[in-house]
Image 1 (tube, one colour):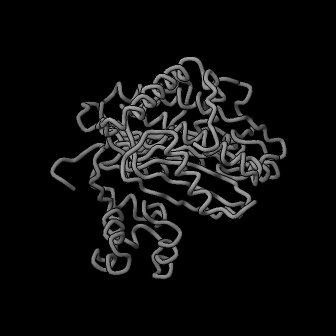
Image 2 (cartoon, helix red, strand yellow):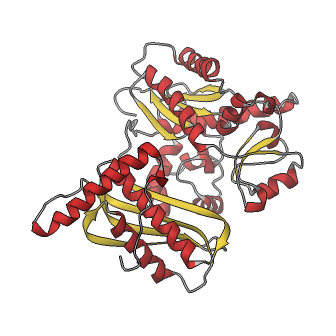
Image 3 (tube, one colour):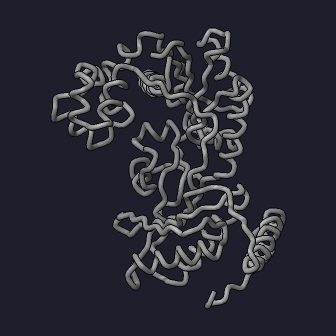
Length: 400
């Protein structure tokens, strides 16, 4: 377990997008509603209220199916800028408690509260009350000696609270607080389904079932070397995690591994011009983000999804790092030509740049034009940030 016992808190905002919408429009409270795209444009449920969940509506479900399950369902368009802003306010309150915060998504984070001299349950209830009173948002919290068990504690606490609320005939957020005492990790995990462990996807789950392994406790009964023989390196993690062992630290800042942009079209696109225009816009945005972060990358990646949901990625690696829109666009367009047949319909398209590092700026005589164009590009970035994207329309010639 390591020399020192840690105390890790996992926080998960309950039905976050819906909760934010309810703060802006209190009439939605208690009603069956979903945040997401329109059903006639192949929209998907991004989040749904607890009243909608009682009708069988779930996140990631097509909105058309959600409407069949819950005919009176109210559909609210997503407002990602608003959710990001509210998320920032929540994370600010977490940082008030400790600098050891690891945000894992827009509505979820881990905190290492080992050094805080307050009884963990009191601290959790205080944090929950502060987020409820100041931001009007519900949240559930799990506390344990490591990240894995704390996260599962949150999930278990939420499920138990929702079952109880359902039995009482209500539809409201779980607001759960679940604490797994030090030394009781394995006993807590033992009766839970095996697929609640990180690293157990559909394939591993099917293989475990074949071996007669159904619960986390069943995994824990197997010797570690036997799990490694059956599942390779993943077997070592399975064996340790099943015993409640997880030594990963809180990562306070994630290093940027790649910068990307993608879009799912509301209707499949066959038009070459639309696809090219989309790639150009995405490449320009990726280049702008790179420059803003003072990064450049050598690997340019195209992501494409056909109407049957087959998703491909193709990449090309340059012999230098770049943050230039033209280079990223050219590579992305070349990759598109290499992978797409004429007139083939596209559902999703995206561009990304990885292999990131500091831009290399060694100027020989021939690079002066490049440097001049980069300085101009940075000036354009500043103007667009200040006055909006449409301030400057750049004419891109065909032979660029």
